[in-house]
Length: 175
Image (cartoon, rainbow, N blue to C red; front, side, top):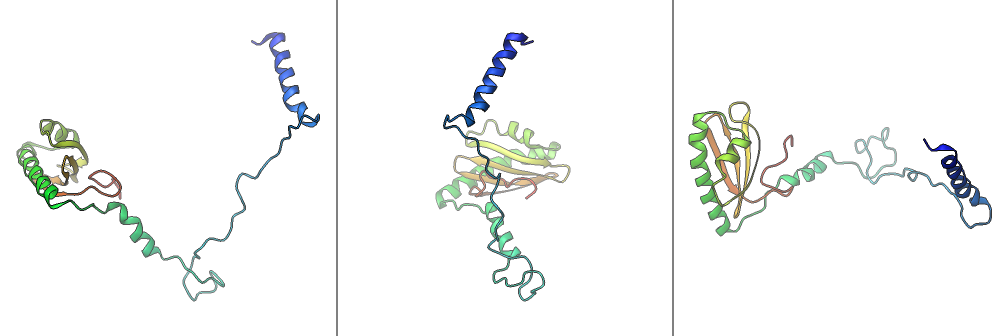
């Protein structure tokens, strides 16, 4: 493929690159460790007072506090009273469209998105599940806030509110 001339060029390049390092060229090759040595963490595993797990430790991991902080992504922002009122009006219009559709048969996110195409206040529709299985969870972004909740069978339950800290109107599935 390369022929004799190509192989010769590759040889010259390799000799120049690797051979020049020791010829006073100022080029040197060094290696560094991939990661620094592990150090002590700021909290210790175990239970306070149990020296068998973490001898000499003065700060222990609080799993409950960590989980509480980890749930912060689900918190919703507050809407101003004006935006809350307008989002409630959007909820009423959306509910009026979803109730007869849910009575006619199962809904999924795509069906809801098609149903809401003509509603000018709707920006986007997020959802997962189906109304005839474990229920359809919905997060509908409107120009004034979120409309969120779900459809379970033919029952539609939606609330107006702010977006979640993680972004959007619906927490990520599985959280």
